[in-house]
Amino acid sequence: ELASAVQALHLLCSNALAYPEDARFRGVRLLNETFQQAVARHAGGVEVLLALGFIEREEAEEDGERLPQIVYRLEEPPLEEPERWAEWYAGVRSQRDELTAYLAAAAIPPLPPATRSLGWDEAKPAPLASHQVAVLHGQA
Image 1 (cartoon, rainbow, N blue to C red):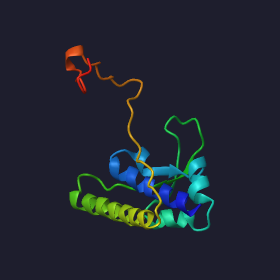
Image 2 (image 1 turned 180 degrees about the horizontal axis):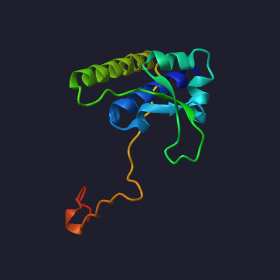
Image 3 (image 1 turned 135 degrees about the vertical axis):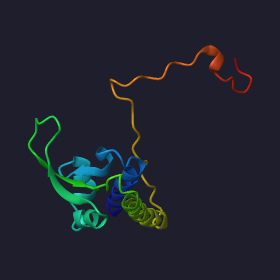
C-alpha cells in the first residue's frame, strides 16, 4: 500500500513537470477514486501531498454542471516572473527526485507520466505515403 501511495505522489509531481502550463496536470480532486485508494485513505496521505506544495482549494467544474469540489493543486507562478517560475519548477523537480530515489531504493517502479492525446477537435496527423515508410530488415 505504501508503494502505491508513493507511486501516485511521484506521478502527480511528474505530470506537473511534464505539463506545467496545463492545470489539469497540476491537480487532483479529493474525491478522485484512484487518489482515494492510493493516497487519501491513508493517515498522513493528504498531509504529504500538502508538504509537496499542493494547495487545497474548492473549484467548480468548468461546465458548471457539478457542485464545487475540493481539489489539491500545484499553483504555477506567472510566466511573467521567470525567476519565481524557475524556482517553483526546481522545487517540484527536487520533490519528484526525492520520490524517485525512494522508489528506486525500495525497488518500486515509477508509474509512467501522462501523455496528451489529440482531442476530438484537434487535427490528426496525415497518414504516411508509401514512399515515406521505412523498410526494416529488407522486408517490403
